[in-house]
Length: 63
Image (cartoon, rainbow, N blue to C red; front, side, top):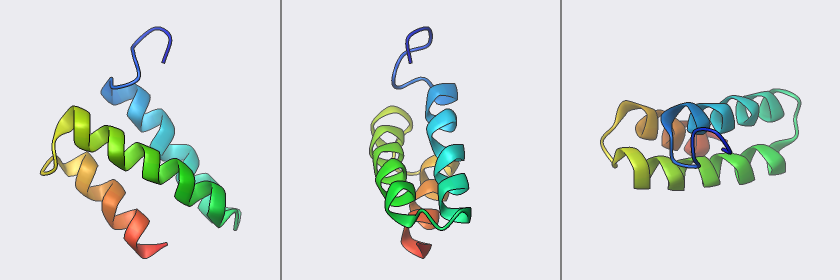
């Protein structure tokens, strides 16, 4: 976040990946919280039809 900014695609990916890790470790509340933030930021930065936004939304819906 410090170097690239909160809405940079690499920053957003670095939020997305730990959310999957939390979910895999059965830390669902943490996973959902982080993925909700990621979805919101991806929607704002990339748009609602971007593949990364859609992927994050699909993961969140499945959890």
